[in-house]
Length: 78
Image (cartoon, rainbow, N blue to C red; front, side, top):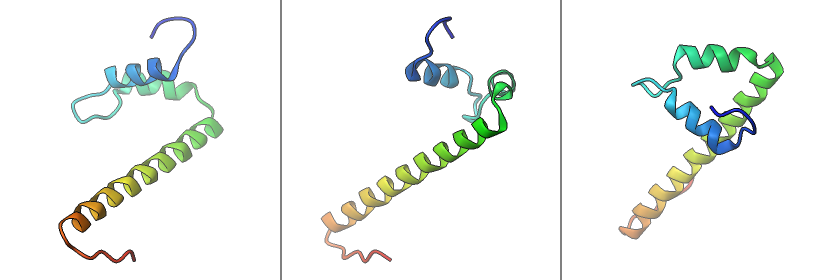
């Protein structure tokens, strides 16, 4: 990562570069980056990730419902 201002794009790029074949963070990146965050910061990061995952899940569900409706199925939200 370049020295200076860390933008969201730079951070995402660095995370992607530091993934292993299982799409998880490499131990070196995790220890050097996550190890420097406080417990409160990690908790906030976890909550933010969980919120984003829920948002994406809802989007996928909405897309699947729309697909089924386009093909003539009746979908009841439960």
